[in-house]
Length: 186
Ligand code: ADP
Ligand code: 5GP
Picture (cartoon, rainbow, N blue to C red):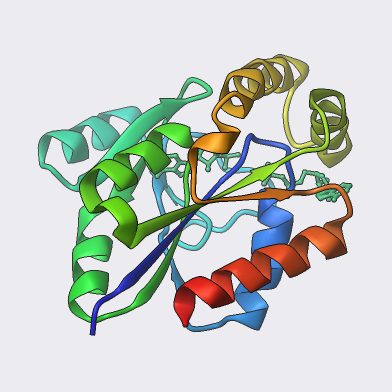
């Protein structure tokens, strides 16, 4: 049986984590790729569950050892996807879900082509995205400004992928996302 790969991509602050948390409870056989990151852990995040939180030296050692299928620098931090997770998942026919930025989505498309389906989630506007980041209150003002500037660039890519979902009303957006995921998995 061949594995399935679904990549979810959205500018930071769109509401991706909110939507994915619901997906996780409703489709429990979707296995999440837990990335490595050098970003500091936020309150409430769990090491090994949300990310593997590691230092820059260890991240660079893992790059050199070929342990990432893709890695990228996003908002001044490093993020990378475990090669072993993907290889084993494909071998065992698992349904895998990845939460990546556009660089990661492009890398997965390059390696796996049509076998990796990318769903892009967009915010109603940049103003609304900034408001959501400020309401979430997990990042400093400087970090929020960096994320909004990055979102402007990432949004230019929204039509380049397999599916596009607008996260205006959270329930409506979740319904669309779930339907797309279920279609990909059947
Ligand atoms: P991301 O993972 O994309 O960075 P989050 O899921 O952390 O974003 O959401 C950012 C903030 O926006 C959170 O405070 C969340 O509760 C809120 N949010 C998510 N979706 C919506 C929505 N559709 N309408 C209004 N606020 C939302
Ligand atoms: P955050 O710091 O908000 O958790 O994530 C910032 C961005 O990094 C998000 O767009 C998220 O999708 C992306 N990201 C998380 N893990 C990876 C990864 O392993 N590779 C890449 N390329 N991006 C990642």
